[in-house]
Image (cartoon, rainbow, N blue to C red; front, side, top):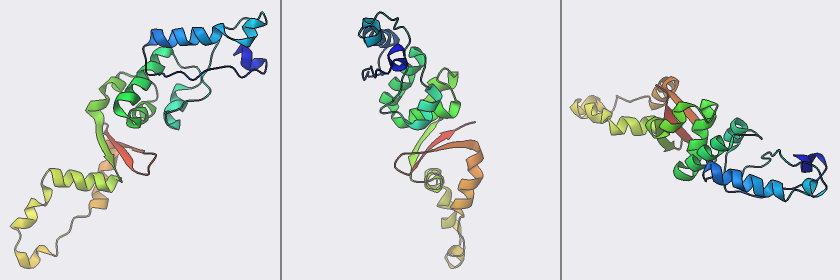
Amino acid sequence: MADYSNGYLHGRWVAADRDTEDLQAAVDRILATSPARQHGEAAEEWAIHDYEGFEDDVTSTLGEWPSLQDLSKVAKGIAEHGLAFGAWVAHLGRADDELVDRFEEFYRGEWGSLTDYAEDYLQNIDFYRFLDDLPEDIRHYVSVDVEQYAEDIACDLHVADTPEGGVWVFSVS
């Protein structure tokens, strides 16, 4: 931060998906090479001004001065599970929430839309099986309003947009 305050752009890209101790060592190395330090000023504070490989929602949650523990946890989660993990952290609002560690329990997957999720769910529970029990002459009169069903189940889900235009779906109950 001393460099930034004095008009120096000093920093280095650091892969954040490592242990907290390794991140601290990387920060220490960057601070040790600070132009401000070379001019006799203290260089003790640091900030993150750019996150590569994180979505905007999670970078807003982490902010410029995240704890290294939170940064490590989120980066490792994204490395293991993809950007959906970051969307989960952003939904929870903080990286140290106990539910962050339960990502796999709440994550339902990625779909093109919430309606696609609802349709897939109905297929998986064999919902349409009842149509086979209807007489053939009335079967074509019966339809399922999957879009309305998707709207109705949305209150029990957290849905986050993917960068590709789809959705990640999480249960919240």
